[in-house]
Amino acid sequence: MYSIGWFTTAKGQGSRNLLSAVQDRIARGEIDAKIEFVFLSREPGESPETDKFIDLANSYGIPLVCFSYKKYREFRGAQKGTKVDDLPDWRLDYDREVIKRLSAFPHPELSVMAGYMLVVGPELCGQYNIINLHPAAPGGPAGTWQEVIWKLIDQRAEASGVMMHLVTPELDKGPVVSYCRYPVRGPAFDALWGKIDGKTSIEIKSEDGEANPLFREIRRHGASRELPLIGNTVKAFSSGRVSIKNGVIVDCSGKAIGGYDLTTEIDAEVQNIL
Image (cartoon, rainbow, N blue to C red; front, side, top):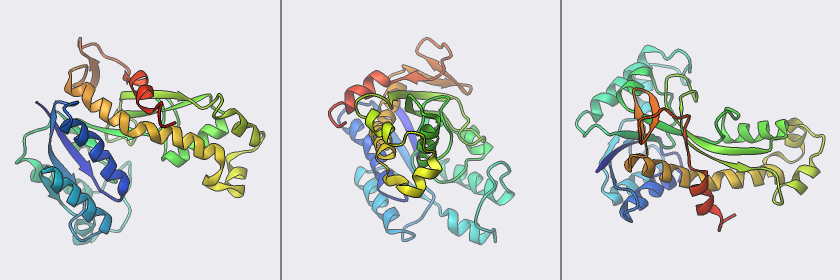
């Protein structure tokens, strides 16, 4: 049985949905795998949303390791905010403590960052093969999902996508693991593009903000694919169709690939909800 690790900060409903997306497929027999542990960078009582996540993980019977990043930062006397490119010693020590606390569990073949709000240092990246979701296609815009959409609008893009990439010390720059693409042109989009003709994202933000119909439609198509992509990615790993060898993504024959294309599978899953 394929083994999985899970890393999260559990800030809201989205983190619970991500866990359920994989665990429910495991329960239905669609994925032959087991989540060996959930690591949570908060502790009970830090947030009502976190407590809901803890209840969910417990309901699945998944071992849960809680270690508060906030309390550890305060214990070390560090200021809030972490440099992405040069993690301070106390921050690297936090990762070392995470590794220590997880050492009692079977070493997972794959780990998933699902709503984990911390930058991962080199030692933690070296210890686990961790993958993370990014709301753009390979080669697409960087940033949060909001930043991605505004950049797509400014670029007058024809298509977008969602991908999972290998987590490395360089934020959002690891090799593409899996992805799907979708058009942002056609019947659902063309009239909306027409309404912003000639406008920049700055102008649209000042008028409508994220309530802009084109912004919302791009987000709807992207968000609908995120949970299926995570589920199908884990399924592809557990069935041996894709794996990670020495930091390189390879197919079932061991050939290096630029990511595993799951567009067909994802389109089939979302066609009835779009």
